[in-house]
Image (cartoon, rainbow, N blue to C red; front, top):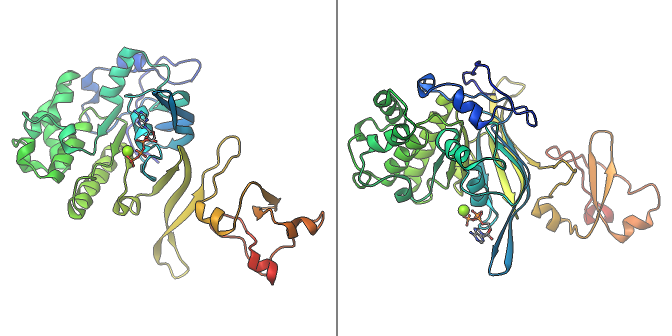
Amino acid sequence: MSTTPQHHQEQTVDESTGLATVADRATLGTADDHAALGTVREHQGPDIWCEDLVRIYSTEGVEVQALQGLNLVVDPGDVVALVGASGSGKSTLLGILSGLDRPTGGRARVAGVDLLSMSRAQRVDYQRHTVGFVWQQTSRNLLPFLSAAENVALPMVISGRRERGRRVEELLGLLGLGDCADRRPTELSGGQQQRVAIATALANSPAVLLADEPTGELDDTASAQVLEVMREAAGSLGTTVLVVTHDPTVSDHVRRTVAIRDGRTSTEVLRYVVTDESGEQRQVAREYTVIDRAGRIQLPKAHVEGLGLRDRVRLEHESTHVQVWPDDEEHQTRGGDGPAPPSGRAPDPRTGRSVRTQEDDDE
Ligand SMILES: Nc1ncnc2c1ncn2[C@@H]1O[C@H](COP(=O)(O)OP(=O)(O)OP(=O)(O)O)[C@@H](O)[C@H]1O
Ligand SMILES: [Mg+2]
């Protein structure tokens, strides 16, 4: 749930999407209306919404399907870690969400803005005000000849925002950089540079902060510090964060981790705090498999390999869950009633599935 302030001004609504368009939003108020530190949202619904997103790269006659029908929904104020093997499509997705790249197909909206129908002017406005971006390479995020304070002020200068000095001070303070304001990037550590980069990305109060391995060039201590201040800053500003990371200190500490595999979101881990019978609170992590609109799911590799699932599986519909069975011969010869339930085997509490193994058959 977001605790961010809501914008109550009247707005024109796009009839097809029911959402305010970028052009409308530009008329909703001057930069001064956004003087408050927190993110202001004019749209309803999720901050990131992707449906069947496809991105095909064609180079020298060879096609690479970097995204193959990706679905993702992120609510306002959520901090989500995006993980996945090299080449799985993480940077491709962030490139599209940041407005730098266009998808080949599918639909995508960020903070109510339709990324496929943006004009060039709308794209510029989108990149200035709706999303902030932090790259892995520290040198790519900041201008080397400007001080930390000047770097943070720059996006506000470009968008004509007033009261910049106060906001620069607040942002640097929020990221623990109060004493670094006058230093240039070369006079800062890698971790400090990334924190300045985050402050810069947050300068124009974007609804969404996108970060592609922001701690990839840092050691463990600096990484942990950067990620912690990023989460805290985003939390206090109400900014939604999607951060690509290989770092378990991030993925283990955010409420939601989404795994991407072969250009599709495959599994998610959600972390909750539960109170047990003795009144003690503890964190529980549950793994889920993503299901798309058409009902497709991608079973985790470990399940597929561990149970030898291939070509086709048999589904048994129970009142509260679905069982997934390997398509083995014995199973087929048992006749029309389907496989006998494995004795004493409870459904997997995480997935709601109970899966028979060869061992069960041998019992
Ligand atoms: N500009 C491009 N032209 C052609 N193919 C590309 C381009 N960019 C990415 N790809 C291909 O698309 C696929 C996804 O790449 P992407 O950079 O999104 O992966 P990633 O998950 O970010 O990987 P990593 O963890 O290594 O950064 C890869 O097969 C990659 O080779
Ligand atoms: Mg990448």
